[in-house]
Image (cartoon, rainbow, N blue to C red; front, side, top):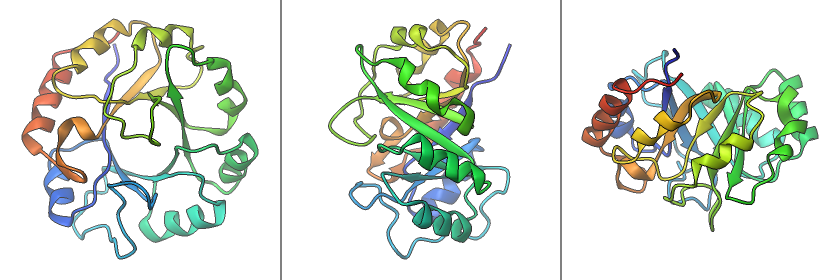
Length: 212
């Protein structure tokens, strides 16, 4: 059996970051894409007292490697999560620089999972999110049955409208290489402000589930 880890994404407010960090998620995501309603802003700082046990993920959309390297150093990012049209060559260059990458793919029933194959050797994880109008944060769930078409070579984060009410469905992902759930809008009070009670509820649901 394996544990499914938890990533809370779209964090921004100092007190809320520390409040949610106290719930011990495995990952926390910070969005550096200016057009996102959860953009951290130019003056953002990781608050003092942030647990070193929580891995920090910087979320980017079509940013240059130069920009991402600067942000990774400034904030001590453990991973770069790439939500745009980043090429295999760009991702490979980041790996050469010693940076760990989570490459995101927007999925619907027509998604061709062979598109992931060229990236396999250059990433730590994939993230499968719902295809929609926005680069992430569409607050809708895709049909997880399509993940049966994925070759499972690289462990993946599952994203897209996840909430305490619907995560029980991950029990159906038997035999798949799922590493973590990525939750954002489904546990929010408002964009960038997370609800600790909802996250606790989600964690309790996860603790009751097992994935083969």
